[in-house]
Structures are given as structure tokens and as C-alpha cells.
Length: 371
Image (tube, rainbow, N blue to C red; front, side, top):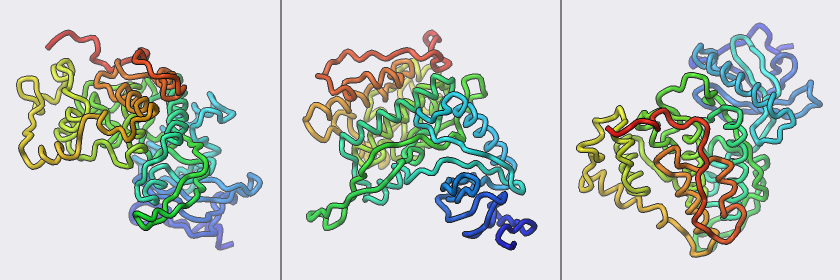
């Protein structure tokens, strides 16, 4: 049968598997269409003919050694997640199967819907309503808390890696803006993409996270651990709330200047300990406020509290939660479980005494004395 293409398996010049709709892999997975593409390969929707004809998402890794090695590391993480959560309660996308197909590592997952990023993109980058943000934030904190309890750091949290279980939406017409606007009907989400997840005992590479969601200790190469995920969550929730990226930059110096504009001066202890001394002069960020870049940062960034969209208490609570997640010092950031006790989630009357909970293993430089 030519549709199973047993002997005619081809790769394109980038190492992607060449496939068509209707092809069957391993006499089991029938390709329906492509869901997405990344540097690692492609994700395709398939019908699983061994699994009651259920639809699955199949991640087909490029036939390139470094991506194949990375896929094996991801499989190790996914196996651990499955061992610890066989009933799939902890909101991390579940691996169903994996195999090698003519040099392509393939991983099958439960089929989810659009990512929160795709949804926003298709919706003119409109912010989510605060009640929906609360529900999504709660689930993200629970999922990340589960990873942290199992000695894992995700290291690549971003709206692209948070997927709706079902992204059906209702539409209203905005007469002012003369356009249709979508509201997602159900806000159940799951965490995806464990390709960069790192066990506590494994080598921690110097740079992790996608730029906009990267914590200050990572930029300053001070060593990182679980709290770097919390910084990313803070950036994500800001994006859901405002519809814009908090740190829209591609440059370390500018990124740190934005942080200072939004969160105040970088603690001197972090400046003392960083290997990136060329970014600082006399213990201060070397940054010209009056340069073109300086003016752009000044115009586009303001102190975090000034982004509050309403005087309502839940808005104050959300901004307070973000301030606790976006603390410079990793040891000062809320843990996932402490985040879930924040008044924003209980909607209890506001109190200032939310204390961070120490995570087991803080950033490698926390015990150093002065410069």
C-alpha cells in the first residue's frame, strides 16, 4: 500500500520527515494535518488506529542528531511526569507513546487545542478578562508546583507553551473598533513542551528561557533554579492582563534597563556577583537614559503598579501578586504553593503579609558575602 510508504520514507533538506495527509506511520498513526512547526520538527494531528480511532498530537523530531538527543531528554522528563501522575491530574500534557520512525523520534500526546498565545494572536492581542486570568493562573501555578515538587524546572514557560484544552469561543462585535472579538468559553489549560525541562541534579545550562520570559539571575549568569519559572509566570500573567509583552527586547542591557524601569534598581548583591561586569559601571547599570534606546525604554516601560487597569480590588491583588513573582532575588519570589495562597486567588480582603516560601534550592549565589 503506497499510503504506508514503507520504503519511500524521505526527509527534506532541513531534516523534516516528508509526509502527506493520509500517510500511516508504524501501521498505526494516520496523518490528518500539521498543527505546528518548531526548530525541533513538526507536530501533526493523527488518528490513532490502535486507540479507538482517537485523535492525538504526534511530535515528529527532525532527523538531526542534536534534536534527537534533546527529544530523548524530553522523553525522560515525560516518563517521570507519567510515573508521578498516571491519572493526568496535574495539568501537564501527557505522553501516550514514543517510537523511532526511520531516524525520526516521534512522541504522541493527548490532543489539546490552541495555545494561549495563538488565541491572543488571532484575537488582536486582546487581554483576557481578569476572572479568566485567575483561573488560568491557578492552573499554571498548580502544574508548575507539581514539577517543582518532582525536582524539575520547566525553564521555558511562555504563552506558547500553555495550551487550552478546548479553545471554542463566542464572538461579540466591537462597534468602536469595528471588529469581531473572541471570548474563550472554557479556560482549562495544560502545560506543554518539556524539551528544556531540567532535573535538579542535571547540568543547568547557563542560558535558559525564551528572551522575554527570562529571569534576571539567568541574564546575569548567577545560577538558577526553580524560582526562574516563577519570574516567567509573572511575565505571562502580565501579558494575559495587558495583551502586550512585558519585556519586549532582544538585548541584555536593554532588558535590564526595562527591569529597572518596571521593578526599580537591581540589588547591589546581584551586581557584585555577576560575571557580566561589562554591563555595569560603579555598581550601576551602564545605560544612557537620554540615548534613543533610553527614550524608547522610558516611553514604553513604567513602574509595574502603573499598569493597573482598574481600581477594583481584584486588579490591585493581581498587580500585587505580579510584584511578588517579579522579585529580583530568586529567594524572595513566591513559590507556586505560596502564590496559590495569595488573596488574588482566594479573593479574600487584601492584606500585605504574603510571605514568600523558601524553595529547597535557591540560586547558586545566595550565600555569598559582599563584593
